Structure formats: structure tokens, C-alpha cells
Length: 136
Image (cartoon, rainbow, N blue to C red; front, side, top):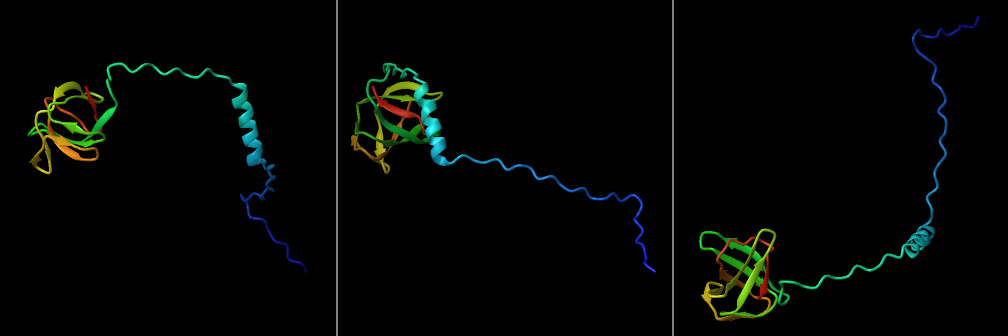
């Protein structure tokens, strides 16, 4: 006598999953060649640079900190600066010109500072980090 196994009610048989075809990824060389062809086809005229307006010279410094109580800015110099020079501070919301009257390095008043020095400078208006300082 052979015993037959009874199937449970409500349990469906599992269906075999179909295998999906694998997409082949092109080799890097083929992709580079295709990209070069696309670039070669698109001959876009080079954008012309607008003439500099309002900026007399390049950036001479960058604001790294601002002390609102004493209205002083810490500036990392990229070019030399001396007392009596006129500077322009330009940023996202900042735009003013002033003369350099009081300048300090490590709490010691100085008349001039070299490239690479961090100076403290009294400013007329609020400045923010990453504002650029130009020589006007």
C-alpha cells in the first residue's frame, strides 16, 4: 500500500520564474569614442568673457570672520595692504568702499601688511565670511 500525500487546501503551487535577459554594458573605450563623436558634432561657439566692470584690480583678500560688537573684520590677505589705501568689500549682500584707517596683526597696530597675513580691520558696514576685498 502506497500512501498518497494530500495537498493542503489554499496553498498554490509555485510557478517557475522566467529568467530576464541581461543587458550588456558597453566597454569604456566604446563609450569614450561615442562621447567624442557627440562633442565633435556639437560645434558651439565659445562664450565671450564680459569685460570687467567696477573692479579696478584683482582680489587682495578674503573675509574670514566678523566681530559685530567692535565692527571689525578678519581678512586673509592675498596681496599687500597698507594704511591709507582704499578698499572695496563685495559679497552676496555686501558692497561698499572705504579707506583703511585702523589695521592690526595679533592685536598690534600696524601700518602695512604683507601677502598671507591675517589682519584685523575696522569696517564701516557689516561684512560676512567669504566676502571678497578689492583694492579700489
